[in-house]
Image 1 (cartoon, rainbow, N blue to C red):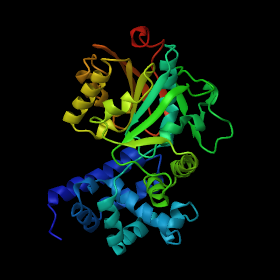
Image 2: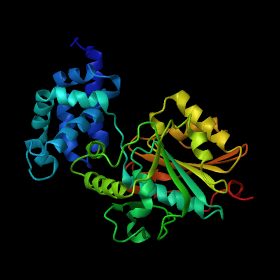
Image 3: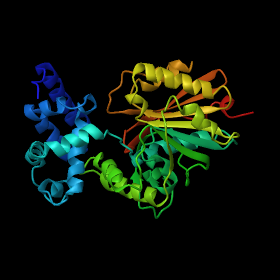
Image 4: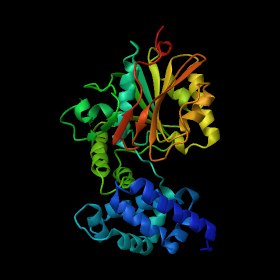
Length: 373
């Protein structure tokens, strides 16, 4: 293994420290402890830098080790991950990664992060309800970057907004609590009826395959409610798989949308997907949305990081989407409405990227041009 560039090592170490502070602190203490320790392990970071570039950040290594523990539940660290031991996870994590590097590296080379967080339905569903209240047209949902399609199963989950109400079946094994920190989001007893609900992903997770399901659980953070909730959602998906099709979110968008009911308004949804596109791909996605809108109403419901919707909105001729100077620990929930050559952007609120909180910031209904006629 060639010696890594010291500057690259420093940058990767800084990334692990930033992740510990910005993503894990106050939310995933087990991973916070591991991330701070990994940042100081130059040997481990050098091993990571020798792997494909897509593995050069924190989440792939964390998921690879988690997947190993799920496959071998008798390992000591696995008990800590399950909450059955209060031992220090950091030294065990570092030792396991070194001792089983061949197994870990094999996962880094063949897998990639496909976070398919069912908790995000808690903020996507109010956006769908907001749209549905403005039109008599049926809605047809097309989820880009669907992974296993877990957010497509929103109508099977119980979404709990505290005093603001609940959505979905009371007996669901998947319960998503979402704290409404401000505003009055449109909470309805049921998810809006959809004429169709389809996912599109370049590398879909097969919910009937045990190894694929295990990897999706491995991408969650132990010590949080995400792990058990994702496993329960995957079981629902296994029993009745969602419609997820293999394809590119830009190149295959039009062909996939063409198969949706012709009388429906197309609702394209993304949740922390477009944020992984480069600048050119974001512009191409915006142009693809605008092309769709030439023949029928289209709405893009986006749950993305700061600045992402701005870039796409410019390509659709919508006005500036929202303030870009925001912290990356906040996700922005927005809707861009398109019809013909018209495009209007609405910022709905600031939300947690796993659906834990929602600050709803809009009143009233969507623009009527989107759905009428």
